[in-house]
Image 1 (spheres, rainbow, N blue to C red):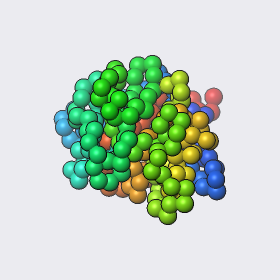
Image 2 (image 1 turned 90 degrees about the horizontal axis):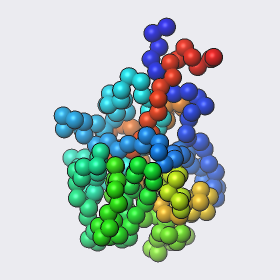
Image 3 (image 1 turned 90 degrees about the vertical axis):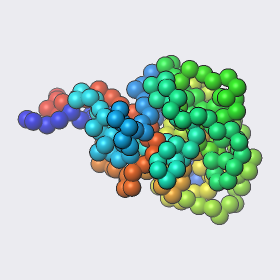
Length: 242
């Protein structure tokens, strides 16, 4: 009695995946699922942490998973495009620049009403789709089935990395985080060769974090900028054993 709403264990969208001697956690979502992006709360205060994120949910909602969703400045402002509830909060950036974000092509993850997309940033600029939520990051990992041309198989730049990939029909998305440091080439191949993503986008490295309530996992330490997460209808704890 008195237990709050929880996520049924059978509803956990995240699982471990082994690929090319590396281990990843992959969380799956489908078009039409309640995928959301968060940055600030309605009062303009940074959300940034699992506890603050949970505060944004209704009493009958539960978080299935969440992870950081794009690069941000020191004050946690998104570096590039950010769309929330159809409103553009930050503009798209299409110029080449330093760091991974500016390693063109970079891209946009778009959550539409009935389609999930990873779109190259300049293509988005020229023909923006209707996105309920969108976040920009970079570089692209997989571009129409091809790996980013600057990725090297033997690169010794190893980090914990996370990102998102989508199926060719836009009906499925995979959110992945490496459990050990990997290079870009291996991370991109996970999406293309193991998960079957036609397009995939890098979110970040080093600071990559995952919240998976079913596993009592909450990596977040310092507050994040943009966050992506899957929300589901809660099931009362008392009903879990029925």
